[in-house]
Length: 275
Ligand SMILES: Cc1cc2nc3c(=O)[nH]c(=O)nc-3n(C[C@H](O)[C@H](O)[C@H](O)COP(=O)(O)O)c2cc1C
Image 1 (cartoon, rainbow, N blue to C red):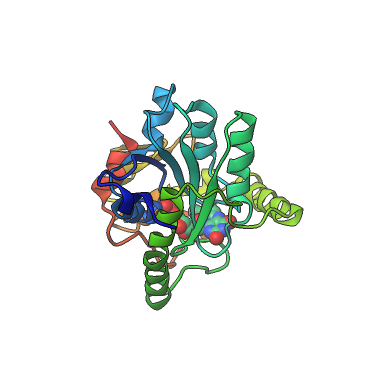
Image 2 (image 1 turned 60 degrees about the horizontal axis):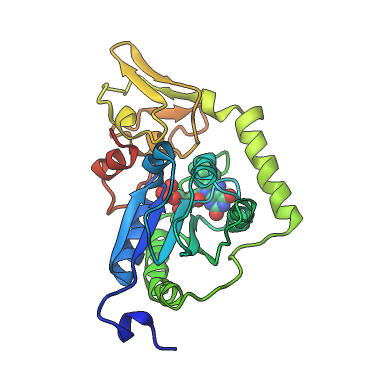
């Protein structure tokens, strides 16, 4: 099939709304934007509070990391509040460590509730950023393999978007995976109480990086210490971006490696949060 890019001089107009904790999703969205051309990247965090309609575009992407085999709450809030202008090709772009589960199917359901259709959903494996009881973090070799596989796959995804190829979302929609995601989220959020266990250690030098990048503006740094509010979306940005590695979740993160995508900066994270 001849792609639209090669048929005309002007590439189709695309908008990708993104959310990222450690930069993986932004890096993938950038790669896709470069491949597609004429693509605008918008932090969905900023779009949530404006509400209303998306600008006119031929294709609209919603890019996010998989959390507990589903979408992060912040993405759900965004999708619930946005309205699409015209009849764009709407696609999901989910990054995950190993298992996308039903994340893109949940996005599809949410779209259908709003009487839109999700035309495609692509899942891309990227370095793990969940520091949990089990050590899932990838070593340098594994990270490089994932970056290379992602770069190889992007042109194929771009072609599908240009040709508006409708497909079933990637991942698995079985009840067992849905249940597994809900259980693990409940365990993390309500039983282990992760959001309440974030704290800064004596290594904190009050540089304010965590406050400046937290996408939900849930962190306040004062001379007395760092305080987390009640609106944590569990993206783990604060823990991974802290330059002093001074942020821990209870004791389970002690001594475990931190990660953020090498091409994404604290400035990019600050831009996502907006002022
Ligand atoms: C709280 C949490 C839950 C996660 N759950 C999953 C999961 O269910 N499946 C998976 O493959 N990766 C999971 N991950 C890993 C991320 O999806 C993955 O590292 C992603 O690329 C991070 O993207 P980001 O840097 O844009 O935030 C999880 C990460 C976090 C922080």
